[in-house]
Image (cartoon, rainbow, N blue to C red; front, top):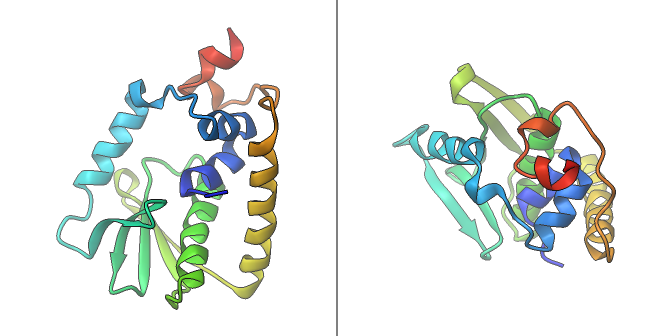
Length: 163
């Protein structure tokens, strides 16, 4: 199974959203919040590093500086653990491709904040467990049941899950 950064992010945010995304049931292309996030990403940090580096038509890294540091741009830090592991997945993936990289930055342009993320050998073991769990969720014949969380009302899938 081909795992994307979004899938890792959704694994932490909502297992149901992960399953729906993997099965190409999408509402995000019409979400204003998603469109605003993409606009913020496109207009942030221009002139520094390589932007939107697509690798194996699978992972899309927001920015790479000298193949030593990668950036993931986020609108807010509300779901930071998911963003941390998404960034760590990119590092994991690059290391599997032979690119020796061990750090990244979560960039929050609207908050004027950056968070340094270090990748350790322990993270690799943890990541492999997460990948296994992601694969198991995606292989299920039906999506996990919806769980109402505080973030649900701002999700593009809210009406689908709770109507």
